[in-house]
Image (tube, rainbow, N blue to C red; front, top):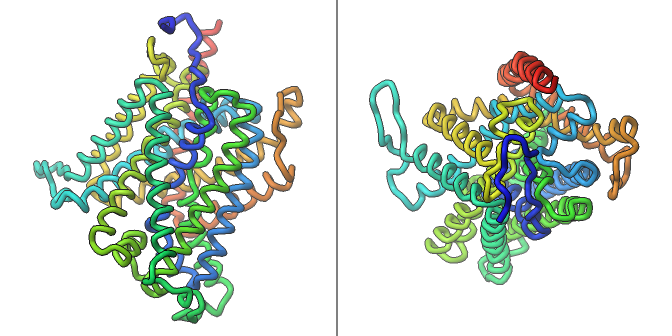
Length: 468
């Protein structure tokens, strides 16, 4: 039996995640609702099948550049916290703190809240009236969707309290089910007589924008949708402190995982356009469900919707499992509430960090989840910071090679330094596009980020006094 953790014992996480569980965290977190929804958005924006696949492939290439970069970082610094650890070591503690603060304020907690709401929306397909208000006291209204989202978040948070190996096993199961469902749909599509390759030869229904600016804007919006579908691969490094043989496992899982996810996405899109005409994909609100309904009737649509529910739960579980490690690492370093660095005496999980994260996300659902527009606007606040930190983290590979040449580097970034530079450049361009498209939200996001500076000063001074 593990020795109980005490306040005088360094908080040490158990390395209980093998390659399968690590791969499930990556794939399960990345493959969420995006593959079921965004192909329609991409079809509307690009106006052609060729454009859709070009964006999917570019998104895969960009994500692979990020994964190749993070692979060196994760294998060199296999500690809980991911970007928090990399930025802190490369540029100083304030940069690690600002990343963690952004995750606390809206980045990770908002993402968990959004995924929880998405899961409840899919559940609403099976539970009529779930969107109706359960509580309405005039000044406060809470819908069934909100309660279902909060219940999902707290349920999976509780499940992750009982050991990272159990959380990893749950993630592996949910990921296997959803990937199996997507691949089954692909096989059914190509084995059905209801599809045709002629859909790929049909001319585009509308001509693309003539001017370059409009075309770039359209493809930028399509790329944003694709990157949302690919987002989450970086979560693997946030649980680096619990991965067995991290020096080898992290690079392999990151690279193989992104390539595998991209393959699943391409196959799924081939199936969508094989079964449905391009115009039908453009007009669809739930393209995967529409394909399943075309192939198997209403039961097929219901089965695919159930798969979407499971897929969303897998993404939610992966985000919960990985996100709490950021807050745990900050607390361990004295840059957040010290109590959140405590580990469960038996299961060796960061229980308090998990509960803090779950309650924070549940609060966001409760306060903002009733107004979808307000909630989406708040999530927009996080976009600039999220992609800014992605690019800044990629550059830390270069910074660490110069500032800390003594670090072990069992994996070296393929294509260094061009791969991290290209990824960072695209991240910068994406941030510029976010500012141009959402100036007010970007400004608010920057204000929320800078609002962490007084807290950093407080916790930093407190940590210094404690150490002395």
